Image (tube, rainbow, N blue to C red):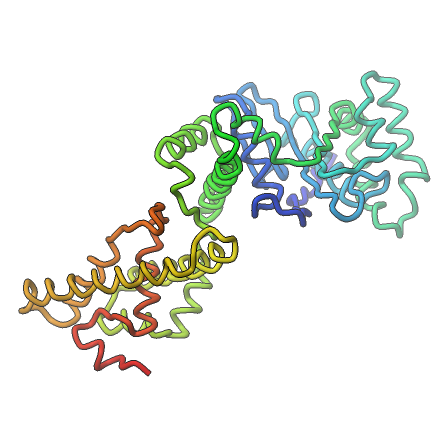
Length: 387
């Protein structure tokens, strides 16, 4: 039999859970739940997959049912999932006898056929379901939207189809966060539980995103994740942590800002900043700008606190600039300017007594430079006068 083309799993999750889509939520849960010697992947074999040490797998398709019913008898989403699973089996990526096929839906959905697949526990029941799938009632006409996916599923052959049906699991939950809360609630006070849940999801997603950026398969170790999350919990009292609201910007986003040459970029160019210094500064500035907007909108901070922070940063800048003028007076203006910038960017301060992400203070310094409230070149007031 020819190896079928395997479709890359696609997400269809309009729901947001503490700001995250469904796949990172489920990734986080499985990283907390899977054995230490397993691996968990996202958008690799499937939306989520657990790779067990003995070579077996659990493939999970995640579907949000906020609109429509992805578990109805002729749902295109259902049959895409079934066909993709069949393709993986045909290609030998997973074993039909060593894989569980989970269809995970939230908050509520169902259908007669998926119910029978879930309950098919013997050969006769499996055979009856396979015959129903091949019937005109389910398979439908060639011009129907589900037909190509049902046909692709059936084309994998009866043995594979029977194996998928026999190992099919339908899981329907109202709130996908409850499973993560259940893993953490014994160790954390209720008032802080959702903050830690959100942090855990963010750590899981960031780890997967980092692997993707490095062009590596997004396969994570539950043991490593739990160690990282445990260290995070020990380091931070979440009541004293302001959590990042956005990930690292893309290379294209950064390049777009640099090409647009806003004032803070021109201030850095005036001191002959390296390309890496520019890229880091733009990334810090973008993330800081987003955090200030999102924290204020969510009521996480009092907006006047930013003004107080800015006053402290301006004072720090003045002291650093005075010191550099004394100690590096023989150096060129660019060298002195870069020294001022590095000293300021290395500063870490709290906001409202709460720990800030490492990029925030450098980003806020660049925001002040963009507003000409401070600068890096010794003659910045002449080069970049206030308008």
